[in-house]
Image (cartoon, rainbow, N blue to C red):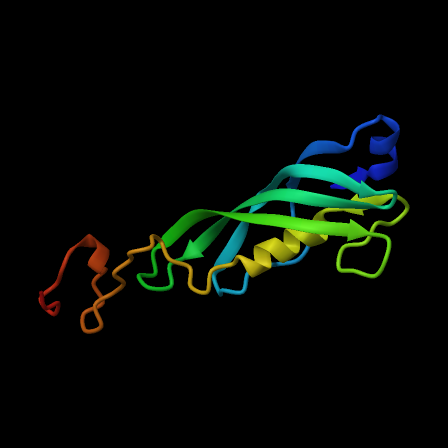
Length: 146
């Protein structure tokens, strides 16, 4: 996930597309029983903005797998996190080091900031009946009033 800006500039390119498969080293999940499915896909474009700076733009496609927060069924859902970040050799969140950029921190940051608060099997999950525990996605029970 390293892009060499010097090599890119030498080839006469001002921008270059990239695609990486990435496996985060740390567990990025903030929800119990929910994990990021590997690998995470990262694609986008890097554009030179100066001698030692660039703009990286693109999207990160990641899938979560785990237990729905409302109905407790095992589920898997995909998410897309867009990013647009400046890399430079001056102080900043994303540095240029030896004319190279590393996209791992952007990927980790984008996943963490786009992680859902609750993991749902689907947006309109009805959850469980508070009295009998029936999964209301499978139909109503006698405790549900219309």
